[in-house]
Each structure stands twice: as C-alpha cells, then as structure tokens.
Image 1 (cartoon, rainbow, N blue to C red):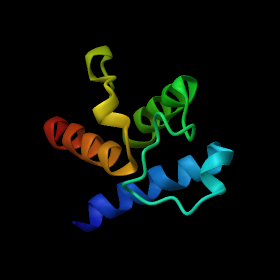
Image 2 (spheres, one colour):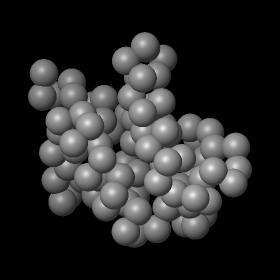
Image 3 (spheres, rainbow, N blue to C red):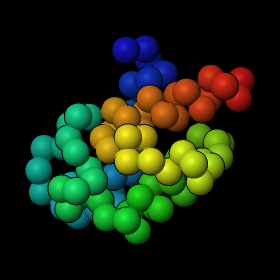
Image 4 (cartoon, one colour):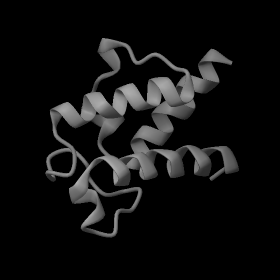
Amino acid sequence: MTTETKEIGSQIKQFILDTFPRARQQSLVEDDALLGSNLVDSLGVLELVTFVESEFGITVCDDELLPENFQTIQCITNFVKGKLETSA
C-alpha cells in the first residue's frame, strides 16, 4: 500500500469516526462493512460522498454510487485513488 493510499484511507477513516457515532463504539478497521452493519445508513453514504468530493476534489457520478464503491474504508480508498488517477 502506497503512502498516498494510506493517507486517503486515514482521512476517510477519521471522517467516519468523527461523523458516525456507532463507528466510535468499535475498533473500526479498513475492511469492516459500513453498509448493512448500521455503521453508515443511506444518508450517511451521501455524507461520505460529499466528503470525498470536497476533500479530494473529485466528482462521484450517479452510476458510481454502488455498494461496492462504499462498502468498506478500503473500497472507498480504492475508489478515490482510481478517480484521482484518471483525473491526473
């Protein structure tokens, strides 16, 4: 895992810990399921999307709002990294 990937993952994890109280109640790791585990609900996904768009300067298209892109911190990190690479 590159330093850039770790930094992206750390920022996303910190946002989740700061924003979603249930995430603070457990030891959240990059592979924990966020969706369907009551950590992040549908409104929370919108908050996550808003965060990654503003924090990383990317645009998340409607057809990219898929569970596999936002299921875990690792999935979100990979999605953001891919968006950054294609826009570079």
